[in-house]
Image (cartoon, rainbow, N blue to C red; front, side, top):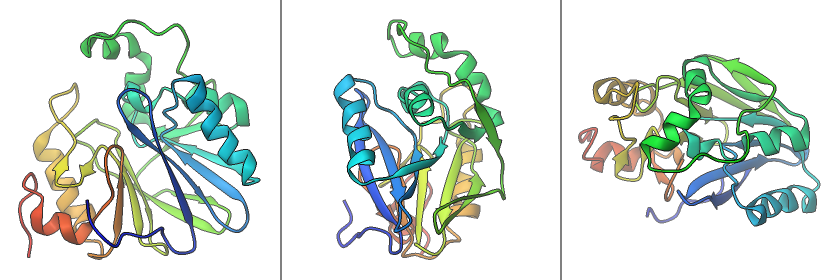
Length: 227
């Protein structure tokens, strides 16, 4: 884990590690009390309560529900958050087939079918170059496929931080052996779209601890060292 990583300035980032696969769900908010939820992954009732209690205790208004990609572990709480706060899910259309094929995803991981629907009723598409706003915040949308065809990264340039899902981890990258994955595509996207950002940019991944662009450029063995 990288030392001296602080909360993004101008924007507060609350991290919840949820469900049996340890997905990082992020709640982003600022002084306006508007917030965005990224990768709502709550599965157990106490996880749903933990997330909604944080939102209520801080007087937050959920304006955006975003997903970096649509693998099942990142979807477990999406329908719950969408219906609770009456907000549509925003994601890349390249991953929509994954939401329609959740039984196969679960079978692939040796898991039984779930007894509830993870698919929200309202879904909107995001693509490369889109901008997502809430409160005084602006997130730039980057499309970085390779872990999944529709993997997105959300970049707050003012705050100097990224929310990358399973694209990039501390000293690792997302697996590319799942359907629609490509190591070459993922590595190229990381190099061309993420490693061109300032070294001090904080990277918030879908699993595990935060890191920085500078650290990953130098030490990530899956992308190669850039000094």
